[in-house]
Length: 211
Image 1: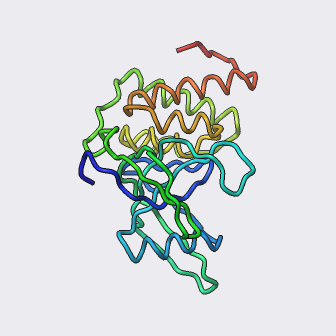
Image 2 (image 1 turned 45 degrees about the vertical axis):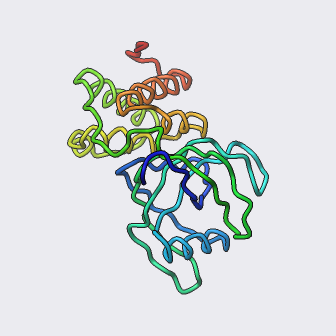
């Protein structure tokens, strides 16, 4: 993934599915075009680009500009041709152009240069970490979610932030903002704001204050 180059990348558009560098994303693929995508990736370098489509009912929807490259770390080929895979996030990318291809799956020219995803992220401040854990717990309690909070508290900052971003029931635009956040600190701050907004919107304003 050298800098300053355009990279040809096969993509999997999927709304609400976020992949982050060093995170993992399990997927079940059953559509013929995406089974072809996985077969092709396994024969090459095992890389595909996860990206969200913009809201559209089209079979070929417009795409957001930024996604994340994933490497197929695990895969299971089922008897009926479907795949179960686990993607390991490598680095975010920006689409430069879409290619005119004959494959059933879409391909793009992408740049990997915009984000510094290959270095360890800076840690969260103790205040931001506490805000994130508190608002996550309040949000989960308001929705009746049951979580092992002792296990959550033991996660490192990156795993906690990206795990919440992946599973929180935010809309596609909010999820995209989290993906495009420049740093883990920026992403954590956005998550706190989103969690607080949704909690207040749902009428649960007990002890809530704007951050």
